[in-house]
Image 1 (cartoon, protein in one colour):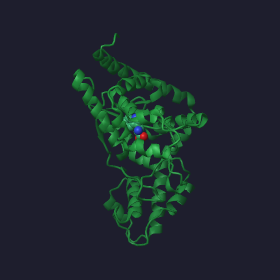
Image 2 (image 1 turned 90 degrees about the vertical axis):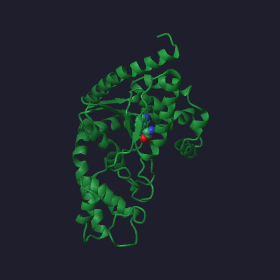
Image 3 (image 1 turned 180 degrees about the horizontal axis):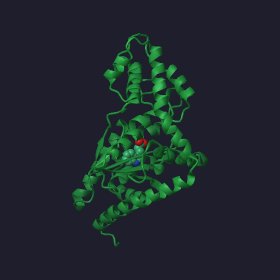
Image 4 (image 1 turned 180 degrees about the vertical axis):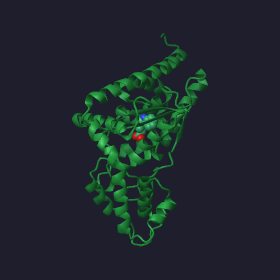
Length: 330
Ligand code: TRP
């Protein structure tokens, strides 16, 4: 049995990229009976960038409902809010004392975010990877499905775990990161050489998984392609068309080859409409479930509470093991 752990931040919008590349893959892993799955809303990570409290609160509800709407099952998996399990902060502190400032300074995401939020380079932003390491290590995680941009954080998690194990013996399981194959790279619709990002400021670049059918269609129709006319899968030279083909393949549950065959004789405009229709269909049941859940606050609260209790039980044990090794009086 493998323990799988991942998390998403309740910030911005959940994009089609998050849906296809992350949370929908989590659902698939949950269905594999041999996996023990733990999924969190990384709401402590979110305040490394300044949040407006009312909007933040709304986002937390919304993202939690989104996780359940995708089909993460609070009975089968643990689906919880990071801030509900205090062990995350406590372990992060302890791990801090085994992490070097130089290491954190070199993190790509820290450098990017420091440039982007130059007026708020807070300690939390720098410490972000250590909190993430705490998330992962608390649950004796085997596998962490993430996007490419998070692989460096998994590497540092492994380094910290190994460093501590070398001093104190077998304290932490050393996790592996992996990139799920399906939808690993859903690109911006306006700049198909960069990833579809939840913080993109151009709304046409990003599909929210809660966009209405009209809006979804409009955005696909405006997607940037190229001045050629042939539909071919070639991410290097035809990034826009390849992105559309990739999305269409996932939305239809087909391979790229099958999808290319479906599109024989299509012009670019036909492809865009086909992608739009398929994505709208893919998201329809999920959006209906979301609309139901977001009104059911009592149910969401109960699920979050149950998730946190189950998570805490595991987290407490791991933390105790480490503190004991460090010499703390328990
Ligand atoms: N940093 C991750 C992201 O933004 C979210 C995250 C927080 C996470 N804690 C995690 C992912 C633990 C995997 C495991 O995508």
